[in-house]
Image (cartoon, rainbow, N blue to C red; front, side, top):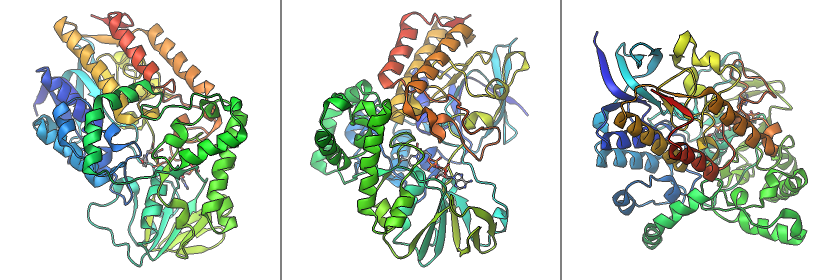
Length: 537
Ligand code: NAP
């Protein structure tokens, strides 16, 4: 078997990998993308579950790099659904003839750094081997689904799958008794979408999640024309806002505004599209416990108003964390689904699942007969993609060993001991915590600039200086510890009960919460000072 050699290998053909290969091939660099799935699209290829859609405004999610593309593409909805999103990514790949640089069904199993040759050697699931000077990992922050480990899961007679693996062929829902486990952003979307399409729907909720209306609507031709005229302004607004959206925090301090005025503000925000309720709220709700308690009480009241049965309403209201303290799911008629006679809520806090049986789910209270089980149980977030590959760096150390207690990086892109490996949307970047595609453009642009610099200067080895990495980790921890959500569970703090080695209450600092402008400033400063934080040789 022969090894294929390239200057750069990009791993993953999702939103990041597509843009990364575009930038590299524009520079005439010898690069290809290796993708484990049989087609491109990553998140939007896999998440085919009913209700899957953006919660970023569609026109802030698309790529900004091509005026022609921006002029050509028409978003049909403010928050576009998965089929359209996948069409968009295919349109981009076809328009810029990127498929020719992609190899599908090629999952990377091992990556080994060769110090003498200053190259990476990669082995794949197909048995093919590759070598390259630089490797760019665009593995996706939410690409490794995690299932619970209930006894009997393999015994269930009907179809059962994680939402990430929702089949391509239509799934028969009509008249079926469906169980959904999990009420994160995914569960909330799927539950709201299928409630009126199934026979009976039983939701198995471990902990309730705060959620607020998405307020989606279609985009008319006239509106789209106005959006096109405004694209420069839109992207500038996103770049200037902490979350990478057009929504900007209310400039007023929480306690300088009367209670009546605060509630009036929230009444307005609750009706606005997307993350306005969070991102355009008073910034104090993220830092001041009392301010957070007040907005939390307001949102709880909105749930009580929307759910007819008071007992069900109380079960849907989180009591272990405040509003915005975990990644906020946005919903369309989610709470109203529980007003339907065919929708039943099972609180696993009261009656835990004992086991999965051939015909359904047995809790400590009763057996629920089901035809289909949907696991909306989340992901091994942010570092999960790196756990799947055995990555061996200098001195034989593996990345898994280095990151055992959580990741450690320089601006989320490099990690010492693993030279010439650049992570796009990596751990401790701003990607997981801000509008994803806006942040990945920042990351891809920085990586591309760095590669261009090293190619032009004959550099063959790039590694972050340990002290620069430590300074970034300190900054990541500092930004995280300022926020109230430091005490909550969920993937923001890197905890997943289904992943071995994760400990409840032990934070893995996986995301940078200093905001999109601070992150961009940091990487731009690194370039401006001639990459002094890196060892280039
Ligand atoms: P998630 O937020 O981690 O939620 C997983 C759910 O499964 C939680 O309700 C969790 O309960 C439950 N669960 C996990 N293990 C369980 C077990 N063993 N038994 C019972 N319940 C269990 O995952 P997600 O909903 O897939 O969302 C992940 C992220 O993907 C989101 O936060 C978001 O960033 C992204 N996403 C985005 C969109 C979009 O609109 N663009 C849509 C979907 C997802 P606990 O809370 O008790 O752990």
